[in-house]
Amino acid sequence: MKINFLKWKCAAALGMLLCMTEGSFAQTKSQPYEGVPGWTESQDKRMEWFREARFGLFIHWGLYSAAGGSFEGKQYPQHYAEWIQTWGKIPSKQYAAVLKPKFTLRSFEPKAWARLAKKAGMKYMVLTSRHHEGFSLFNSQQPYAVKNDITGSANLSPKGRDLYKEIMSAFRQEGLKVGAYYSLLDWQHPDSYEAFNLNPNPDNHKPDHNRYKEYLYGQIKELAQNYGPLDMLWPDFSSKQHQGEAWGTKRILTDLIKWQPNIIINNRFWEGLENKNGDIGTPEKYIPPTGLPGMDWEVSHTMNESYGYSAHDQNWKSFPKIMQLFVETVSKGGNFLLNVGPDGDGAIPAPAVEIMERIGDWMQVNSEAIYGTTASPFQALDWGYCTQKEGKLYLHVFDRPAGGSIDLPIKNKVLAAYGLAAPKTRLKVETKAGKPQIPVDAFTIESGPKVIVVEIQGKPLVEQNLTQTQADGRIIMNANNANLQEAKGLKIIGANTHDPNRPNALGQWKDPNDRIYWDIKIQKPGKYRVLINYLPNAKHTGTLLLSALGQKFPFVFGVENGSGFKDAELGTLEVSQQVIGEPSTRMNLQATEIKGDALPEIASITLIPIKE
Ligand code: GLC
Image 1 (cartoon, rainbow, N blue to C red):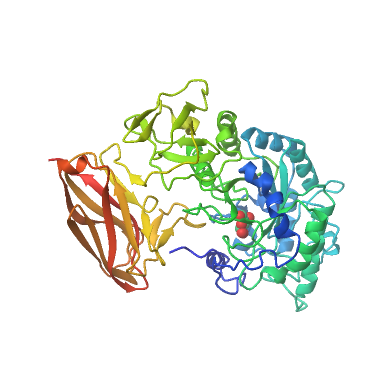
Image 2: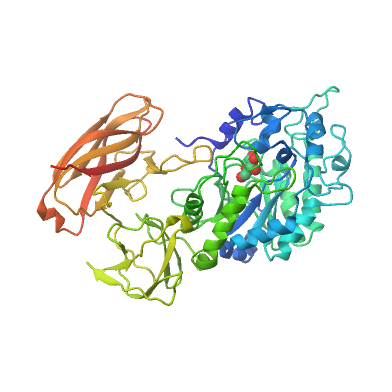
């Protein structure tokens, strides 16, 4: 089951009443901008650069960066180090007194940040103008920001400087678009919805939310009017209780489009990461399994676990892993906003710099396969991902197929094929069973995926989605390459913000008329073990029937609870020599009985050759 984002936040905040109710991802599309005129009409024009860019930098920098995951000697193991004030239940006054002196700027070089981003091939940047702690990098002139009873000032920039301005100008000078992340939550303001969750309230002050709305409006006005062009506003975040008008969104949106007619806004003035309001959806640390059809979106992801700097979070993803997340996102039609968390001195951690430099080296050769591309025409590919432009398919190869060539499931005539690394060297493309065979030279994934351009005549005519035999002889039928029929409820459920490594699985199978099939290409006759991989759940039981080649494999889900996906045997499939000559074999999966709300989630069915 998808872990609910807000529910998690509630748990994480240790019952601090940050969230009043459960949230959900659903949101209606009726008035994507609260009905404010000017937005919908200009959307395509405003979104032009974003659709071309595909790749941006997220910067989380604030007082939490000076804590780096520890406060007064205590280390907080939680991810999301920018939440340390909440993890430690630290009153704002104490938080500021300890951390402001540690926010030294000793190594702060915004121009170097901007050069690094440009070198990595990023086309835009989003900076935390202020995060939930309520301290801003910009020099806000709002009365509360200048002087407040709790911490004296909510401004972080030293006298005479404006760090936000310095960073935004540096990036603009390098030709990147710039966006402001702006927290709607505020853990210090006495009139915010979270007022006094962390701070003492000696005078029994009754928060006046209208005053807080004025503050938000005033600060957003400063961001939009005082710093030149603002290409994106990235508010964060809403709950079912506090969304839209709770922030005074109508007034903000009415004026914002006048102040910055080209601005893009994300969907977080409203509740849910995939809600269809604003200009873009914002999946956080996960890639929606089938993209977010019908809307623009951007995945924000981290190189280690936290957005804000954490000295003890050394769980850095490898460069190939980051490339996989990046390319998978783009191949599904999204933008990739990759985060860095500079420390309190202003230094970007060395592993992050190294990853960005390596992405830059890859982009130098391959950026054509990223910028301005649209989603893959294919459902799932065994060897990697695909992006496209008119007349061109870009094959991003992560795993070189065992036979050394890709059996590309299209019916088009191939006009030319070449690697982006050596565009002048044409590849020899043969046709087998009507499909082009694209040769792939050996390469090391340590330098990133290999990109091959296939120029085709006309629009891609995709062949049926055929599941191929792996190099070791196994055939894996998973959620990504499944064909869903009827599918009233049945869908692919993927990883989520707080369980990013969860496999994609077939879930919400509530209706016995929903069906699944795979067309597979078996290459060797003989006996195959049939294994199912599923997520046991005592509330979800029932019976499945897998049928293929006239053989039937019923499976009863027992009443069991487990902590993760597990394998079970379905039986032995016998494959005759005759079958091998067939272009494909259909494997049908039916739900013969569904007890409880749905069947357990199914990640895959695998055929494993039995050696005799
Ligand atoms: C979340 C978090 C936050 C992080 C952000 C990034 O809402 O609260 O810490 O800045 O989203 O997507």
